[in-house]
Image (cartoon, rainbow, N blue to C red; front, side):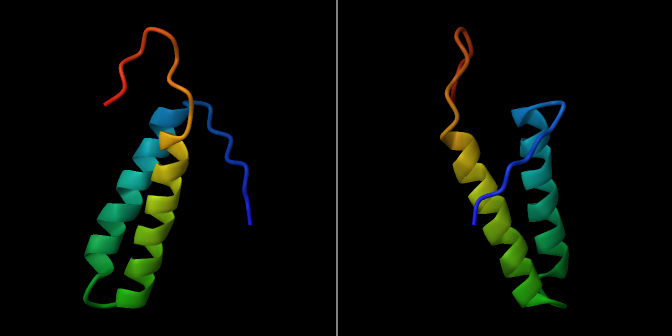
Amino acid sequence: MAALLRLPGGASEASEIVEALLVAAGARNTTAPKLAARWRQIADDIGDALDQLPVPPGAQHD
């Protein structure tokens, strides 16, 4: 299933969401490991999608 995510701040806001998911997963790792794993997978999926975006002209890509 695909989803369209519209963020006014663009890719930088999506990166913040990925970071928040990873922090939340770390906090729930012992109390809810299945939920933590799910959040990590969502973060990975978003990160993979961000990596596939074209790099704007003049921008550096790590």
